[in-house]
Length: 117
Image (tube, rainbow, N blue to C red):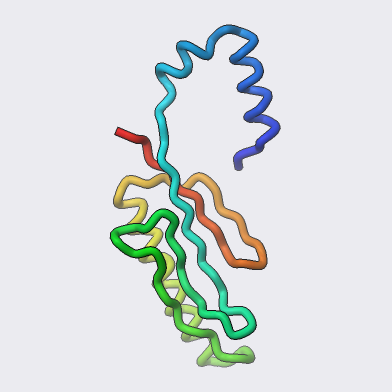
């Protein structure tokens, strides 16, 4: 996982050593994409949000989970998981690399990067 303090220390070490010029020439530039799997909360719609848009889509709806744990709940949950997995697979096939996953009250966020050409 990416640690901001570790990155700061590495950057400071490179600056102090005078190695930034050669590092900047060899370090690839990346574009980043965030994918949020947003759970339905308080009447909100469950969906996948892409930033920036991926293959012309900025978001994709997911099926609302029924209240309570039941066979229907598990069926819908499994269908939603399959949709999320299909989208994540498509992103990696397109050359994006998963670099970080986090979960909070908004849902699960996936951070991808791809070297700029």
